[in-house]
Image 1 (cartoon, rainbow, N blue to C red):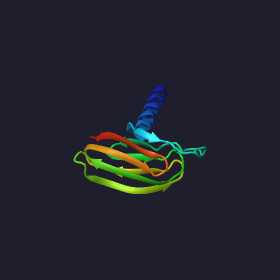
Image 2 (image 1 turned 30 degrees about the vertical axis):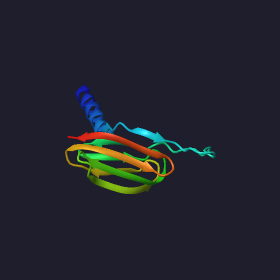
Image 3 (image 1 turned 60 degrees about the horizontal axis):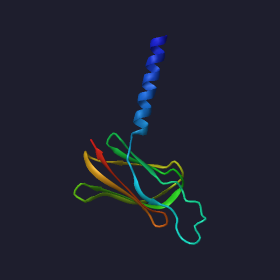
Length: 118
């Protein structure tokens, strides 16, 4: 009975690791500036690497977010404007290599991060 419990717990923990992936460190400015900035700013999107895919998750509902992924040569390998509800996750399959992620919103600013897909 103990072996089954330990095995089940181990499998559960491993499955959680694959769900969360490796987070992409994101830098930049995400706020609403101006004289009437009392509007609540949505939380910035998060990004992680899950296997060979880049996962971008919208923490809060967001519209008109420009997502751009460039490779180490500066070539755009993915670009799209997305809108989604809280919890929306976009999966972008990528080959092995080094990439830069740019998340741009006309009202809240620009975020960017560098990551490697192995």
